[in-house]
Length: 530
Image (cartoon, rainbow, N blue to C red; front, side, top):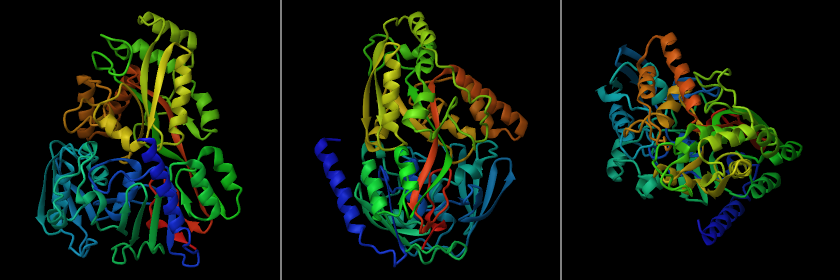
C-alpha cells in the first residue's frame, strides 16, 4: 500500500470515528467497535479469515450453529443424522426468511453448498468430501460424501447459506476471486438469514449492520443491539484512545501493552481467554529454488537441518515475555488446546540452542548463513509485525539475514494465496475443533480441494493417506492414532516453525455485557448494551 493510500485510509477511519462519536449511551442500541483491520469481503464463500467470518456471522448462518461455549447447536437445520455411512440428513427450520424477504428452503442449501465448492471458494476444503447434495423435499437435505465422514456436521457449520434467487438476480452464482481482486455485488451487499442485516459497507472506512427484527432466534436471544458500527483503525494508540474517550464501546484487539491501562480505567473492562489459534512461520520447502532468497540454484529450506537450525534460534520465551507482555502461550505444535488431537506431550518446543543451530547450518552447507525475505502481516494477529521483527533479530544471530516485508492482510493473504512467498507468518484457528482441519488446509498436498493453504510446497503421499483416513475412520481409537501419528510427522518434518498460541484481550465499556469467545468471533446476538 502506498503511503498516500495508507494516509487516506487512516484519515477515513478517523473521520468515521468522528462520525459515530455523537451516538449517545442513552439510546443504548448502537454498538460501536473497532479492530486493526477490515473485513476482507462480504461474499460468504470467498475468504475463510477470522475477522471476515465475524462479519459473515452477523448476517449469514449455517445449518449448524455455535453456542456461547462453542458447542455445535441447531441453526438453519433443526436436526441432523447419518442415515447410512455416506449420507447425512438435515431437517431444515421452517418459516425462516432471508433479509430480502425470500423463503429459506432446501434449494438455498443445495445452491450454497455447491457454491462453496467452487474453485474460488476458500471454504471448499471444509466440504471436500461432499460428492452430492440434494433436496429430498422443501425442508430436507441429504449430503452425500465420497466415504464415511464422522465430522461432516462440524465442517458444514461453517458453510453460510445464501439466497439462491438473490444470487441469480445479482449475478453472483460463483464466489468472488479474492486473490484476483474481483469485484462483485456480493462483496459489498448481503442477503442472509442472520441476526443482523448489512446496511452500509464502505471498505476500510466503516460497516454498519442493523438488527433483523424477523430473526427466527430472536426470542431465545433477546439482545438489544439495534445497530452495529464497525470501524477499522490500524493505529493501536488511536483504537485505545477512542475506547478511553467513549467513541468506541468495544475493541477486539487491545494492544498487550495497553491491557492494564484499560483495565484500570473507570467504566471499562477487559475480558481474557486463550484463543483457539496458533501463530507460526511457514517455509517453502518444496521449490527447487527460493524466489525470495540470495541462494541461487538450490533451496536451503529443503534441508531439514536448516529448518531445525531456525527453530533452535527462535527464543519464544523472550518473545512471550517482552513482545507479548506475557499474553501468549509458547507453542511446540501448530494447533492449540481445544482442538481434538491436541496433546500437551507433543506441544513441546525444540530448545533454544544457538551453538547447535549454527552447527546445523554449517553441516547443511551454509556456515555463513544466507538471506531471505519474511512476509508478515501487520494488522491481523496480536503484535504480528513486532513478533516478526523479533524473529528477524534472532535469526541474524546464526547468520540468516532476513528482510522483513510487513504489509496489511489485504495484501499479505492474496500474496500467499498466489504462492508468492518463500517465508511467511500465518495464524490458524480451527472452527471444526478437529485436527483434520489443520492437516487438510496446511499440510495435505494441494489437489484443488485440499491443501489450499499449504504454501510450503510440501508433499508427503503417506501423510496424505493418513489425513484422508482420519476423515473416513469411524473407529475413534483408530482415528485418534491417525491424528497422533500425523502430528508426529508434521513436527518431525519442521515444515512450519511454531511460535505461540494466541491469547485474547477484549476491551469494552462496562455497559456492554458480551461473552468473550475463544474463536475470537464476537457474536453480538449474545450481547446487551446498558
